Length: 122
Image (cartoon, rainbow, N blue to C red):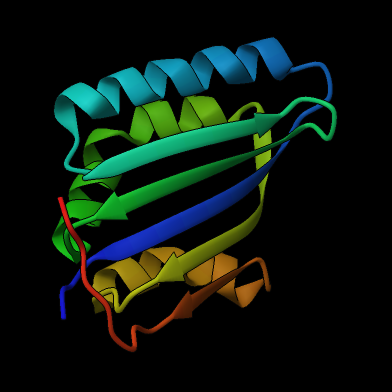
């Protein structure tokens, strides 16, 4: 069993902010691809529904914390153009990551689902 963590973030794009949201996400993804530790990041957008989904795969909790620290400005820039509707975390994050996720879990927008079994191929 691996320590991997999979995040699925469903976002509601702020009306009138579609172009700004797109640019903020593209900038963030370019930064993450060059500097951050994620194994995979994919973002999908439904312009008609004004929603987007970001899926991120991390090796472990330390990589999540590293991403949060180094990408804070990019995360804030994206967040200026959307609201998180749902944050799903699959895996077993450490106490520090769980603490960072607590606001989403506390208000009902998020959950952590612990692993049962599985494998990854890269």
